[in-house]
Image (cartoon, rainbow, N blue to C red; front, top):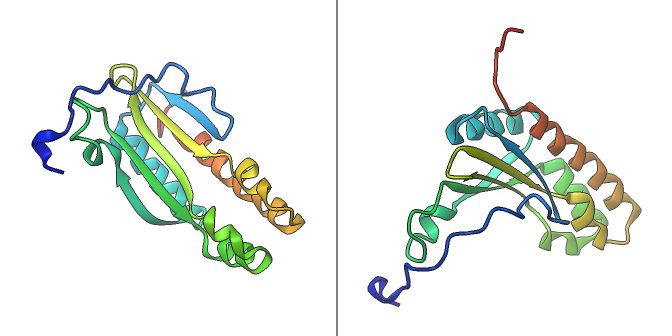
Length: 156
């Protein structure tokens, strides 16, 4: 398809109900920029021993369809030990890894929204008790990531 034939008049995403999803955990931050939040997310992922296996720039990818789409990046992340345990317990879990984190600008780019996949819900599709135990651990680590984002070195 030629770039000229694409429709750049699609409405931008409506973020008003993005915090009420059943398959993700969402936090919004008004105290950090997109780049600061991204840097903090990546730093915490390294500390928590998650690898970033891919990055998808949604703004760039969908540029042909939307005008002025705010910054929006999806990180595909994985922990090798957890992935190995998942696959050894349920080979079909390969369809649910890697985990996803979405970082985007909302509210006229003044708010940064970070969303994590609710691993406990998505992985509950497996009936294996080991998988459910792993999902609780991964979810806890990812929620800690959300708690980590924000102003750094603030004096109170």
